[in-house]
Amino acid sequence: MICAAGAAASQLIFPTTAQAVEPSLTAITPYLEKVLAEHPRSHQARSDVERARAEAEVLAQPLYNPELGFSGEHKRTPAGTDSGTGETTWTRVVEVSLTTDFGAKQQRRSEIGTQGVDVANAGEAEARLALVSEALTRLARYQGALDKEALAARQEAAMASFMRLAERQRKAGDSSAADLSLARLALAETARLRADARVDLARAREEVRGLCACVPDEIAQLPPQLPIEDAVVGEDIDRVLDRHPILRGLRARVEVARSELRLSEEERIPDPTFRLGGGSEGDATLVTFGVSVPIPVLNSGSAKVRASGRGLVTAEAAEATARREIATELAAARASYVEAHRGWRMWRDQAMAPIEQQAALMERMWLGGEITATDYFIQIRETARVAQQGSELKTSAWTSLATVLKASNGFETFMGLAP
Image 1 (cartoon, rainbow, N blue to C red):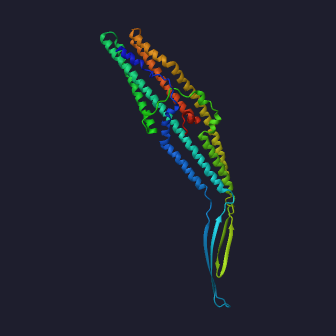
Image 2: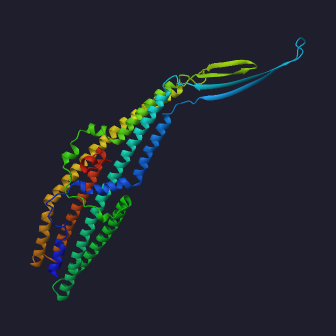
Image 3: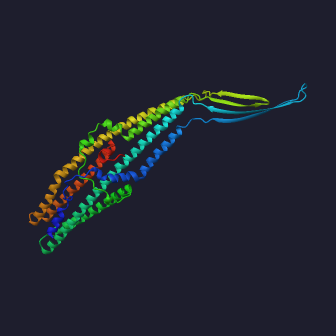
């Protein structure tokens, strides 16, 4: 029984299988691709792009259609003293009229449509980037919850063996009632910890399932080694910002606002309407023509120009604000990843083997009678606590990687995935 308890305690850390080959980060690419391909948010973003293209086609259409008009006139001359009888005259006219764009209104509208597609494309990239980052974060939390639940299960098994041993020793008179009470309290504590771990695991599992509509247990395991810090944070920040989808979208919005300003200026130029037609007046043949031009005296369009100008200033300010905020977010994400990666790497390199050695050492000392049951319990609980910290550090490192890859738009570089 003592050997069983010691063996269970020695398993309170991560599995001790060799990790000679480091799997590529692309191992989880199929999971991320499935999320991007099937999640409704991806379909919604793609629909926004298609709608923007349809709207661009609308804006590229000519502004005016020709008009066809018919008019007639019946004129009757009263009978006079000289003529004796009156005259009746019919006038019939058919006219075609067309309003002509005298500026570049249609060109500006077409530009707005094209730039609207750019905005939608950037919005789609932004939505997919957020989705893939969320997918990686949820996977890291789920697999971290798996590690914690397994650790809690091993700890509960060790404490169950510890209690059974304490009961036997108490019956044999080799231990005190305090040792038995300690064992029971230890088992109760580990049972609570495992219940909490199961709750967290169930929540994390359903979060992954809801995102990918798949079986979470079938997703590839995250590798223990993450990209080196220099590879993640070494790229020039201005280059990162230039290709960031949020800023690309805001730059496109600036161009839309600029084109709207130009359009409002063009709209101040009146568009004339030309008319050409023909008909008859009695026995005579008529040819009609004319032109009409709006007179911008009640609404000159200057207010719209001013409003469009303010819209451009607002769009430029929004881009500058977002660039500063994203730069700050990127710097913070890089710093967080560096610290999280270093913490996980240090724990893996320095704490994993000592934890295994500590568990085996406590087992030998307990079997040899060098430490009491209380000391053994305290040491094993501390060993489990440090092992749990390792699981938390790994999860933190992966969630930090997801954050920095989202901030830097780096999923294509590190996972072969182009959001």
